[in-house]
Length: 310
Image 1 (cartoon, rainbow, N blue to C red):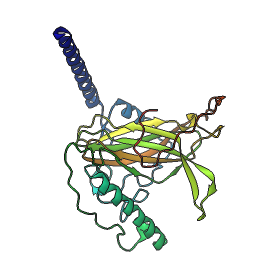
Image 2: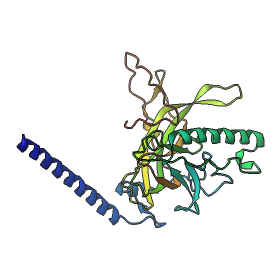
Image 3: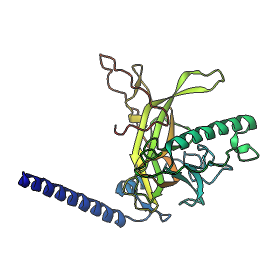
Image 4: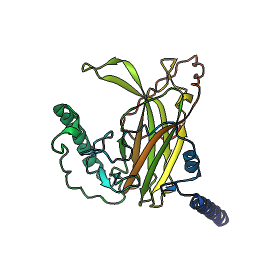
């Protein structure tokens, strides 16, 4: 038994050493990459390669640099000043978005819901959107409730925080590149999502269209954080979506970029979010529908903790 235990420990040590060597090699390769033209370091070689493609459009994300706005960035969610802060700094201009996940889950969820309701009411009352309000409609946040290890009751350990841009109309057949600059000093690996929506033919009583999510989804992890600003980039292909709705092929009609921070507890920063067209391709038909209808998956709530994987 002692011999077997010793062999097991030796195997684990070898594996840990190999993993450490792989990480060291990846770090060295990343440091050999040239800087972006504006001096920002790339997250990895794939990001560097994606950024070498020529953009065929301008930035489709409204106010991706977070510079424009009065009370919070135009084209983005209201900042609740507790978990999401419109902060000074960044790589593009003088402002960026800061997300803090070291908050009591119960406190942040209740406060964020209140902020969203206040912003919606201010937009309705002003007639020109909440940004047109004469005074900042979002009150100062409550005092932060203390957190303590192991932090499982925090935002980081439960909900995480999504920060979303406005919907973007899809160009059929377009190939897109998403890029974003990010950093954190807590060793976390935040994520960025692109979620696809389509219009239902029905509307609410107020005349608002009903959007359905789940038809398309891209998720990427911003790994190997080292505390410096790094540029992440990826290319994705909505035209290759194999989604069907009620047995019929369905392409996403709207896209939305979502920044997401969760574990471990800490402060995460994002800036220079860009969505650009880099090519075009034919829309691919989905495979034949199975004879036995599949049970529809339960749709996630828009801010529900994501299911990882494809």
